Amino acid sequence: MVCIKVDKNDKSGLVFYGVLLTDIKTRIRQAQLKATLSANAEMIAMYWDIGRMIYERQQDEGWGAGVIPRLAKDIQNQLPELKGFSEKNIKFMVRFYKEYKTNAAIGKQPVSQIPWGHNILLMQNQFLST
Image 1 (tube, rainbow, N blue to C red):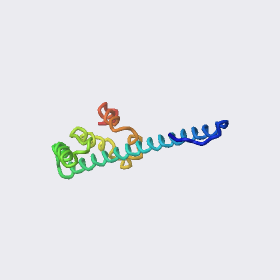
Image 2 (tube, rainbow, N blue to C red):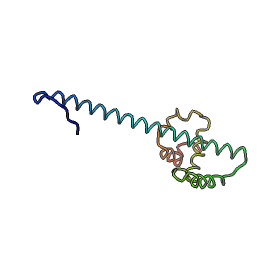
Image 3 (tube, one colour):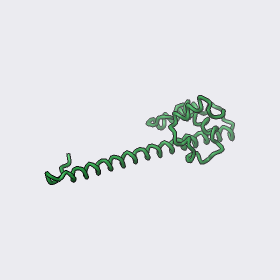
Image 4 (cartoon, one colour):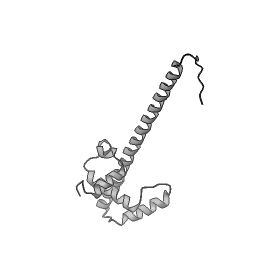
């Protein structure tokens, strides 16, 4: 608890402190939201790029869909602390790339500002072209 020396008859010191505390809390919340949105945009860009890498290799090397289960298993074995790289999710990354492959600036698109789960729902509900 913080003690502020104020005149017993002067409540303005407490009021100013309350305003300062409110301003600081607001700034902290703004920074937290900005960091969350920034991290989400980076994750979406990473998923798009992973989808691109897999798709291009499949096209260039003639790899089939069988590479995806192997990648999922190897990522899990080599980076066990990571989540989000299941076979199903990696397939969504490839599909996500194919939906937006003409737009390399994915981070500047509104789709990068919504959570990954919402992008998956959009693809599953075929709001995007297939």
